[in-house]
Image (tube, rainbow, N blue to C red; front, side, top):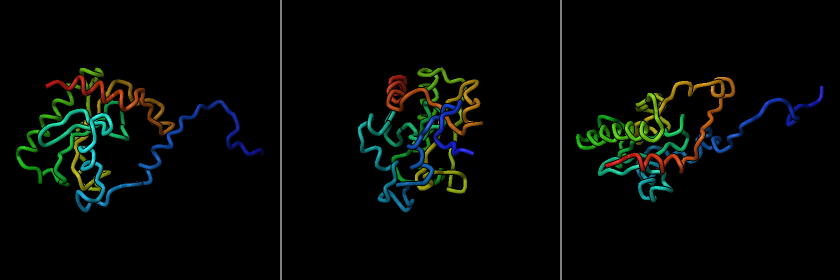
Length: 175
């Protein structure tokens, strides 16, 4: 039988080589502290467009996920490098809650999101990719957004570039 690697067939393939860095854990911080290359500590020093920051508060900020589950997947992150939810002070907790509510409103306004997955993975064993710096995920959902692609092809199709998504959400964020 002839080797079929690379031979034309009836399948279209979506290649996402940029995700290999995430899968392999390249440049993943050690989690020992803010000086370990933690992206959530370095992002606030960037301008909003380069850092994919949607909005900034006094104690937290909202940023798009570089490896989103859906278009508009963002995270609410405290500026302070803390790992556990119960390590937040009352003001950080309040602003994290406020920013989560504002994220829901902005995503509904900008994209017509019909539902959301909201939550935190606390600790590496709970699925936190960066366990050392707490972050809350806000993932917009739509009817039918899980189709054959992720189920059969293990590929998520995102119809919008992150910079365009950031711009729409920043405009929809409001005061």
